[in-house]
Amino acid sequence: MKCPTVLVLFLAVLIASVASHPVKRDVDPSLVPQFGWQSGVNPTGSGDCDGAVNGADGKPIKIPCACPPDRDLFIKDLNANLAAGHVVTNPTVGLSFPTDNSTASQLARLNAAAVTLQNLNGSGVGCPIVSTTFSAQQQAIQAGKPLPPSAAPSPPASTSSSDPPSLTCGPVAVSSSAPATSTHESAPATSASATVTSVGSSAPAPTSSSGASDSAIAELAPPLGFISGVNPTGTGDCDGAVDDANGQPIKIPCSCPPDQNDYIANLTANVRAGHAVHNPSVALSFPTDNSTASQLARLNAAAVTLQNLNGPGVGCPIVSTTFSAQQKAIQAGLPLPASVVPSAGSPSAGTSRVTATTSSTAVATAAPTTSSSAPSSSSAASATSIAALAPPLGFQSGVNPTGSGDCDGAVNGTDGKPVKIPCACPPTQETYIAQLTANVNAGHAINNPSVQVSFPTDASKASKLARLNAAAVTLQNLNGPGKGCPVASTTFSAQQKAIQAGQ
Image (cartoon, rainbow, N blue to C red; front, top):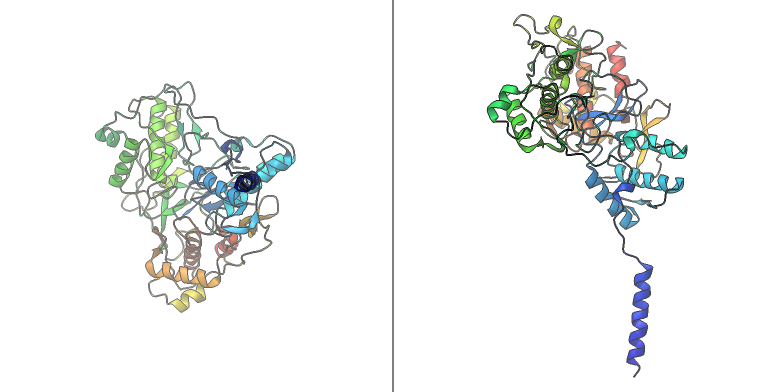
């Protein structure tokens, strides 16, 4: 007769236990702070892209092209962290995600997002805060002001055929659900790549691209307007189709632009899929009529294809083509510019080159000027000479940790404060030298084979810059294409300026 009593007591204890440990539910995605930025913006071809924040020089801080991560994967990681009550890959870092709208709760959610971002792949191994507008969001929340426009949740994308496409010949990694005009927190008005522009709503809507045949795509594909391998410096970079503000050709990877057949094949595959095959979040269309909107849509499809040839944000920069000049001509109703193909006796073709409004060469990856002597081959560099001549990192990891996976970097931002970097950056000297040696011996970045490196051993300016470029490429591709440490975790930028100044 005592069994029922025991059973009742057991059930009571079980119910109380369940009640005291409620089931963890996934967060409401609408409460998760927006990145305010997209991955793959203005890739240099060496694994790094523009970040959401400008440095002290007014130019975008470079970040791995894979940052910020895919939002769905990010929210999945955030849910896992919240279920554990701490960052799974960095258990000492706690987090919470209150759902009310108080200032404290908004900041707690932003902190949860930040620590998740910075510890995506391990303790302090993830994406830097400057790949988002989190810093601007924090300041807005603390000041009781509205979030920055780019950080506000985007409305559902319209599928109406009357919506004009957005031309994104510059930063193209813009998903169909995000505005094509997302800006830096302090973005410069112009770039050496084409300016992001939206087709006006008064433009006629382009027809569907689904009916475009392979021959039509090949016939209507915007011309690249330039060829690869122009005026090689011997360090893997060549002249691009666009001049900087000083009238000098902007340097690009010598493999850019791609072969015409590769370009058309990739463009055709993307048009058939309705998005960039190597970056599915980026939609594109290829209407076949001759309206301004349709011409710009085709140019956008070409730009998206170019910048995502080998992966998300891993391709060729816009300045390896005349796409920017073509965009301006289409918008002005003018004939397309002639191709800037160098003649046999004039490899630089300086007189017919497109001029950019500002320079946009990558930090710590600038090539020697054409007046510099060509560096010698790196094939004879021994492991000893590589270690001896390797540019110093100039900084150490783990400086002033915040407890959320990020630490101070070697470079200050526009506010005079150190730019935040993953605490694991820069790598140890041993890891850096080992990776650099492997890359030099291979002649390219092992983890990003499309990016060539050389390591000449003489003391010329060209050779010093080539070695610095090899170091920067190694740093930014430590763990995969575009997955490594930002240049801001080193003094490479300052070293570059000193070398160029002859110091």
